[in-house]
Length: 127
Image (tube, rainbow, N blue to C red):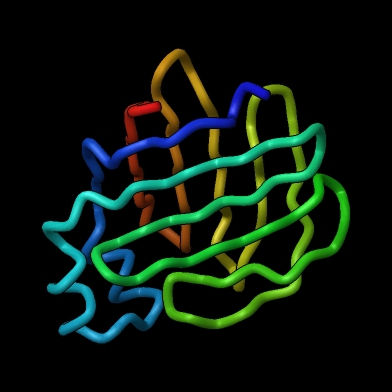
């Protein structure tokens, strides 16, 4: 249950270029720029529920490792994909975005790569 917990965003790199690349409107990008999102991860074996709250926007994704699922993206699209667990890393492909999430101590690290843009998020466990 290494992933389970509640995490608050501490830092991020390449936020605006990444949001522009995925097609998020400038106004939405600006509105989200200074908000410290909170991610809550519930894990029961291979079953996960991830709730991300960014201001008033709440995105909930549920999935089982290795099984096809439908995930919401930051642009509001729903994408069918499969989440994999490789060691202590969750990996998934979403519309050309390669996402890797890993936990180390009280931190969760998420890296999303789209072409040559690498968006990195670091969040700290708050419970």
